Length: 73
Image 1 (cartoon, helix red, strand yellow):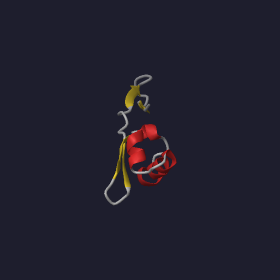
Image 2 (cartoon, one colour; image 1 turned 30 degrees about the horizontal axis):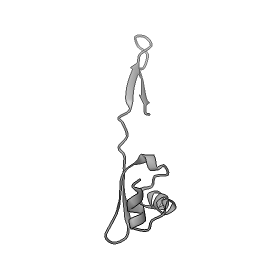
Image 3 (cartoon, helix red, strand yellow; image 1 turned 90 degrees about the vertical axis):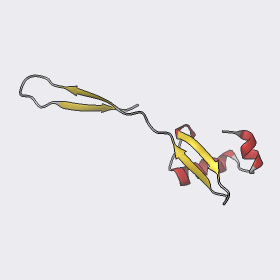
């Protein structure tokens, strides 16, 4: 968060967190790539793109169905 930007636009941290929840549908500010104060007074939110999940395929033995596991983190 850029404290000087919040002060300049008279936005409290609570106001910003509310805008993130309402406009960006994110609860954790750490999930936000960028939030901008728009000319119309709204706050637009871009969520961070998550890492691609790691995919692990496990085959136990011949003739047994392969299990595909996605691990995200």
